[in-house]
Length: 92
Image 1: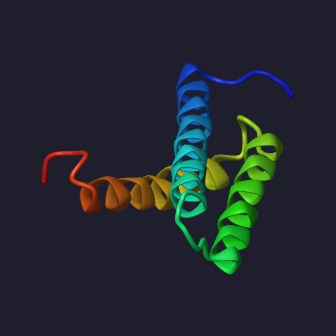
Image 2: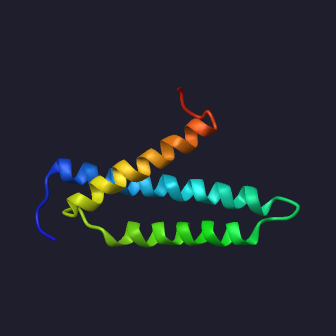
């Protein structure tokens, strides 16, 4: 893979953590939906598919994939922030 800078390593690890956090959110949504008296099977399938795609994505990018890492941190970071704000898990 070659050498990389400390900043590259930090951004890479941040992207991996962002994906892990988003996977956890999908796990929570799956758990919530599954616990309902009449779970929405279509929604559960979609949530599981999204989670699976994230797992694959997390395993395929590398420290030198700067554009992918930047997209992950911005795009998924915004999704996480919105989810937490919706549930009032972070200060507004």
